[in-house]
Amino acid sequence: MADDTQTNEHLALDEKSAPRTASRASTTSELQDTMDLDDPVAAASKPRRRKTVGAKKVTEHTEDQEEDSQERLVMNLLEMVVGATPDDLATQQDEITSALLRLKELQDKQPPKVSFNPSIANSRRERLEGVLIYLTSELSAIPASNWASYKKKLLKFCESEPVINMEFPQRLLKVMEIIYLPEELEAIPREEFGRMHSVARVCATAAQAMGPDGENTDGLVEKWISAKVQDLEFLKRMFGSMRNTFRASGFEHTRMPWETRD
Image 1 (tube, helix red, strand yellow):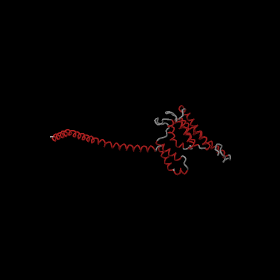
Image 2 (spheres, rainbow, N blue to C red):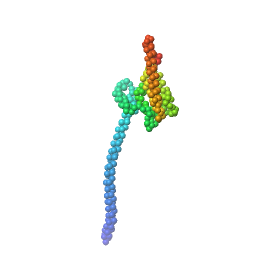
Image 3 (cartoon, rainbow, N blue to C red):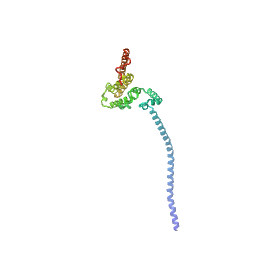
Image 4 (cartoon, rainbow, N blue to C red):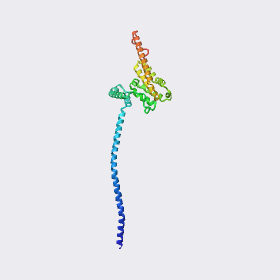
């Protein structure tokens, strides 16, 4: 009798556990179905990762193209030229020529401008540094050591408070004190008039770049540069005339009054 009672109790327990087992099986099946439904979504997300990688490659390619910019080329040229010996220049002649040709190509596509987009030109310093990039040829006429000193003074001036209320003629006068007058004292005695032509354009362009947004000074800039060129041409003719006069008087090997002495 005791055995029959235990058997009945086991059967009762089995009957109670059966629904639980079925419920667990049902839950497992539902989870499996859910996972099966989720699989296509997971599979679909993989191409998105590939697209992200592709976008990254495109971004890297764009950054490589941006490195081939005028700013970068100018920096490379300066690194190759500044402090280089004649042997260094001869060795790097092909690289320098290639960089110059590429720079000219980029400049032809984007002509020099002094007025920049306000979103780019957020300060006078940025406008000044930006416009100097387009004056590669003119700046090459100024000795590198001289220009390093001039540029430092220019940047200090363009960030000073007085420049805010200055008009173009006032800014130009200050820039001439920084660049033109020292160059004039050095170049004129050597009759380096081409160098002074370049200096005049650098001065006018720098003074224009330090002006406020919307200032229209194009006419004044070109007028002043033209006047300076005429002055320099006059000096050149006068020096030549004086030299010819000395020669005609029998002083062919006489040092001219304006020539520098060692």
